[in-house]
Length: 329
Ligand code: PBG
Image (tube, rainbow, N blue to C red):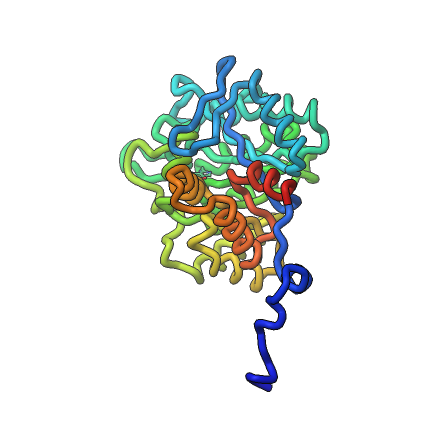
């Protein structure tokens, strides 16, 4: 039956009916908040490209985590920002037992047992050249297989420090298996892996690279991150990571890749995470600061669309704002 018997507007006429038939709900339960940790003391350094985001040293991190917990956000993902003097060709600071992330994990878990603490496992913030894997000194190529053991060591050191979940974001082939095997061998078989499975070579990461001081010193990441034009390849990437032992698969970025999120959810029926990345955050913040957009409305709509596309978990720099807005009702 069509119009006039059917009138779709009937179910839009009051807030109550709209509320009852709403298909997608945004809930704090699905959000993770990214946190940047660095060395030194007394550091609470604003990230210029991401207003409202800071880098914290060990002594200032506590207050930030307190806030996250009191807002009811269930989990954080940590990124380490080492002193440039500690970067080297082999990313030694990435897997040091007393490294920035390892120490932060120990500190957070000591005070907040129930907060889920995930860690980003990658080398780019720790290598002198800023690439996510080892670099061949003669060709400048990013080497896949020699990077795997370093990534696995990094994941292991995070898990040993008490990380509840490790999240490899490097995009080397075989890294999920390498991490899984090492964790299992070391008795950490309970620690899940959230793999950045379909991670695209995206201009939306620009602001993050300032935050993490992780921009490649030469070339770009297109030999390991995916071509934004590809969708079938995302299915292959995700299938491979699941086969290697990924527990949660991530699509990144989120907003220009909602079709990929939906496709991965339909194809695999696995828990899917989506990363609402730095550029997506910066665009909204910048426009909102000028009064050009309704920030709250925009963020609610964007995060809802990511959920509607099929994401179970959203990693977002808006998590704290969202928590406040949801509380206000
Ligand atoms: C590290 C990593 C990046 C992001 C998360 N992990 C940057 C990159 O791949 O260059 C991006 C996050 C964001 O933009 O918010 N490999």
